[in-house]
Length: 364
Ligand SMILES: Cc1cc2nc3c(=O)[nH]c(=O)nc-3n(C[C@H](O)[C@H](O)[C@H](O)COP(=O)(O)OP(=O)(O)OC[C@H]3O[C@@H](n4cnc5c(N)ncnc54)[C@H](O)[C@@H]3O)c2cc1C
Image (cartoon, rainbow, N blue to C red; front, side):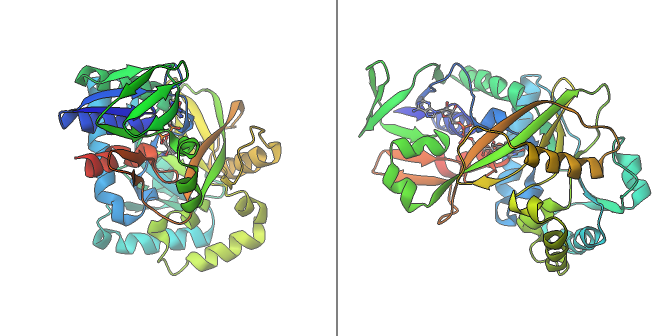
């Protein structure tokens, strides 16, 4: 049995890996010379605490697969955990409330005092610091080195990757490339990110798909290890695990009244570290935007919020925008089109954490 996978981002490669293990002959087609979409534009945060508790087990499965591949391919990764830093009283209240219930929900985490937080992180700013929640299950990759390594791992399993091969049309069991060549297979998986719109515009509209534009920045290499990855209080409003914390509405109110623009631009303050020591900084979330401009105002707000958290001076030497798609009518990440075609896209900003688990659940 032969499968064609369109797209060599994390979704396509995760699907290819699972299908190959099922015994399929797998051919992957990507229009670029390597993975260049959302899968290399991101922080590289493997971050189960940012996801809905219902997918926690799938995330853990993904984590085990990432670790296996990163270790086998000897690729940069840091098993450093995540510190969610509280610099406002309401943030600390939410973190403590979550921590009180965490064990029941199956999460292992610790509440740290100000002093314990400073002992855990060499870069946290003591000035506004009230404490933090430490979650050890999170780890840090550099997507620019992890994605090529994943492509190598998938090839070692026996999958064939056709780079520089843009798929122009899909009809029943046949794909046609930009140069007119066509290929047939028993099964086709469309893992082209939000660009499945080009092939299935009606489904795209039915799912109320929106593009999300995220602004990102990188510093020059730091000589020291930053310790755990860092997240600030704005993430508490977005991560579903915190939604039942009684103090969350008060935090929302405080942030709405004091930082309306930060909320309007969907800003989180997140910091990870990439392979050469650079700090990866972000991000904003603007739905319905596909322009390529970077707003200086948005980057300044992100930097101010990050600078509230860390004591080193953050100087961006590189900025870029990342894009992913999210359905506003359906949370699923897999959709069937006819008998032999599947669309597989990690719905929202979850792909680096969840794709392996989703692929194993769906394609096994
Ligand atoms: C800025 C940013 C930060 C993020 N941070 C995180 C994070 O820290 N942790 C996390 O878990 N998730 C994060 N995410 C989400 C995650 O990156 C995405 O969910 C994931 O990368 C999506 O993977 P994908 O394979 O569906 O899409 P993509 O990576 O976009 O891959 C799609 C591939 O399809 C190819 N393609 C498209 N059309 C065609 C065609 N017609 N023919 C051939 N090839 C085609 C493209 O070239 C591309 O390689 C972030 C996303 C962004 C944008």
